[in-house]
Amino acid sequence: MTHAPGGTGPGGGNFLSEGFRELGRKLARGKLRRAIRQHDADRLVALAALGRAAWDGRIDLAAHASVRDRLAGLDARAGELSQATSRLEAEKAGLEAKRREELEAFGARRKAVEATKKPVDAALNEARSRRAACEQAIKQAESRLTAIAGKLAGLERDIASLSAATGPEAQPKAAAAQAERAKLASEQGELGTKLAQSREQLPGHAAEESRLDAESRKHAAEIAAIDAEQKAAIGRIDTDLSRVRTELQGATQQSGAVQKDRDGTFRELGAALYDAGARDPVLAEPVARVAEIDRGRADSEAGVEASLAETRSLPGATMAKFWSVVVGVPLALAAIGAGVYQYNHRPAPVVAMPQPVAKAKAGACEMQKAPENGAGVAVKSDCQRSEGTFVAGQLQKGKITYPDGRVREGTFVGGAQAGKGTLSWADGRRYEGHFVDGRSMGPGEFVAADGTRYRGMFKPGVRLHGMGARTSPDGSVLLGEFVDGKPSPKMVLVKGGKAELVDTADSATAPGGTATVEPVGR
Image (cartoon, rainbow, N blue to C red; front, side, top):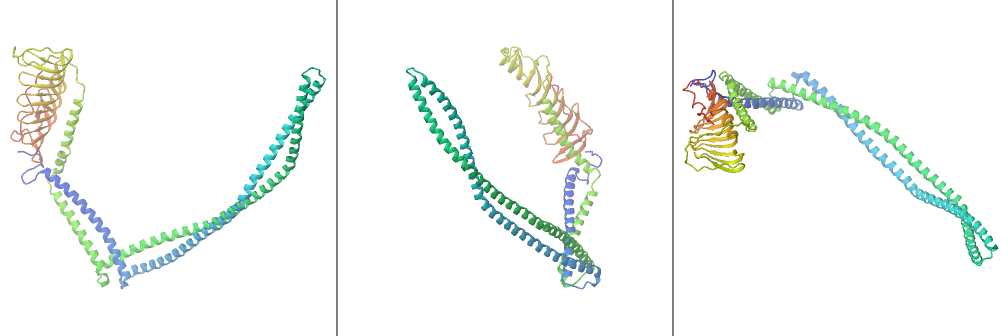
């Protein structure tokens, strides 16, 4: 077997398996590099712990005087900031307590005034109702008295006229008019008395309303004054609180900065002590921790270097060939599948061709005429049998069985198979795909009598033409481009879970035959 340059050869290993191993190495290197970063972070923490242990243990740091002096200054500054923070926290708590007390005090004062104002407002509403009722009574009485005066004037005229009359009906009418006049005069007197009383009461109602209104306004002014006083008092406290909070925030930020400087200085001190080989018993544990981290980091770095050495020892273009198979083959199969789908969903072309002609065996079968339209069966004298849906006497969709054992299934136009369908032979061969004018054309799949399976783009004669795949009975798959049924010179052979490039021009290394079957015909 011949191989492409850099391909699989004696002692060179299989590029597909080597590619997968390289992927595993890359994943392992990524994990080791993350471990190295974690070692670095852990080392900084361990060095800071070493420096802090030396500082807290008060060991002799004369050899590191500059670091010692910086730590002393940072400790002093941290103490000052701690005191300032405590003072500000206490001041803040006092101001917040004072604010709550002021709010409670002002709230109590406001509630007391509101309690006094509430009955005054109720009495004011009643006084307004009494004044309004009195004014309404005066208006009604005045209106009624005006109406009575008009009626009395009319009755006086009627009585005078009836008194002068001599007819038999004059006397009863005059008596009725006089009775009505007496009734109205009585009502007039009563209304006059009520009107006088209402007019006498109105000033008192108005005065009471005015007094209560003034008292209610006074209480409202007191409430407004309390609210204004509360706003001013709380405003002063809030100003102080804002100042204290700002100062407290600044102190907290400074404390954080000082602590950050202390941590950095502790790391610096720890690194200096570790590099100097400090042996003080107080530092034994933190020194051992740093040494343990350094050993772990060294092991991880050695693992990365060993992995990179294996990668550098790979034959040239190993990964290029690996990716061409891992990515290129699925893309090719996807393209084939997409082509199959597109062709299978294309509308069938309308052609008018004669029906397929089988080898005649005249008189072997009794003829049966095809139905004009609808489902039915048609049988020719040579035993060719058509069954399915007929239109205008021709099979449109169904199955045709030929005397030689061939069977076509699918759609038919003008007697010729068109669109998606199948064609099978008595010896087990089978083509499933797209037909044009009764011949294979487009995406499809063909299974030979020996079980070899061809899949891809076909041309008439059931020949692969374009990207395709040939699967042999032993399970090996030949992938690549076919030209008129023959594989191109360089193809990918997948066998036993391994893939390799093969030279199909070498008959000794090109498995199987060409993807060609005798012409299907009409």
